[in-house]
Image 1 (cartoon, rainbow, N blue to C red):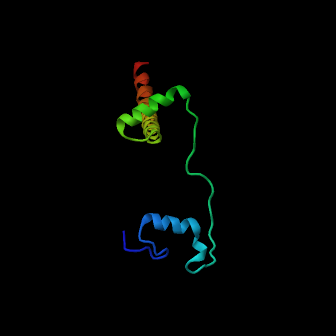
Image 2: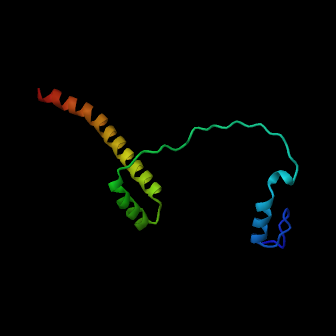
Image 3: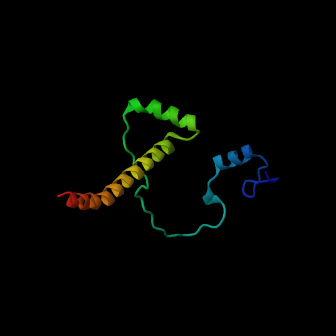
Length: 105
């Protein structure tokens, strides 16, 4: 840590914390008016998961050293990839099946 905080003049993290407990940013620096747009739509969607899976998810995530949220996202990503791969296989296999059926007739 530097010798002193530039705003609070405190020399410890505790001192900095105590300063900001008593002050706010409007008391220091230059205040400027700003305009900005906020998009409040969440980038995340939450889906309920049956409670009986919770401990399994928690343990599996812990075993892998990741969060439950990350594990679930990885599992969903894998499943989506699997479904897309199966759909592509079906689409490429369908014309061959039709042609093969034509030869058997």
